[in-house]
Length: 340
Image 1: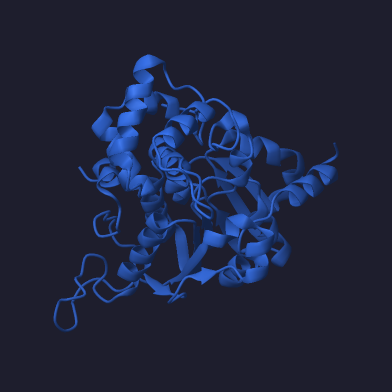
Image 2: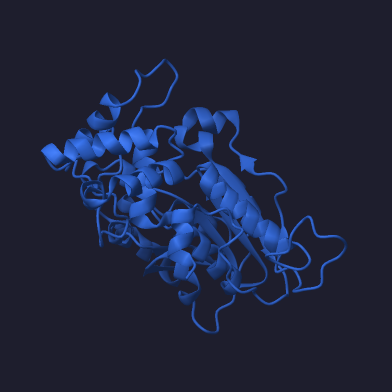
């Protein structure tokens, strides 16, 4: 396959969510430098590069994503640079003399990861129960088969917002005592058997369980908090941060981060405190008072867009504020990993 054919295939196989809205929020112009902190299949990066004569640093923790992009990435020459790493450290990707004018983050699992049974992200495709975005560290199978029942219950409740978390944790522990849970199909059957019958219009009973385990395995909420702080450090004055989320846990963190950074006094100032608060100047100006959502046409054409929410902010001249995880709306489990 030629580079041109590889690029055409990538464009054909991946439809980035809220793409027009992301580009409008980033507002690229010639000479700008952007960081796509969740490169994935490269949809946002290609759209940015098509919008202006600018440059993009594509960051991804998944080596498969970068390997698949390399056959076509060279067509952009020096305008596209690929970096393997977590977006929680995206401020280390640009060089010391490179000013970053915009950052985009698409939070959660990529379509490419969901569609591949061997990655173990989806209960719709039978495969090894893996879920590791970076393909290193403990897998979902390790977690399901070794975590204490109480810990499993906390994960399902805090990360999946699963009301039946305790009952499902008991069912998983009972099943693994008979035989280790190794595949997505096995886990899906356990959860389905321990859940009320699915009614028309309801999501699959295993949806929240798989979401929770994926978030826990990849420390996604902790990574999001670190990524927002890294973006604050990396952006030049006037630079724009655009974040697309897909469930309430992520959206709450982004909303509270931008709110805390755009208020006089900075993070940690109570909204109930009387009068103006002395403290650091706001490091962001909020560009989206309410989240931007996909229109009816996009929701119909791309089911993943139905839950997507976009929030954006513009960096001010003020220095970056110290990283403070508390107050961002992270569940207790995520805070335990961030606050010492």
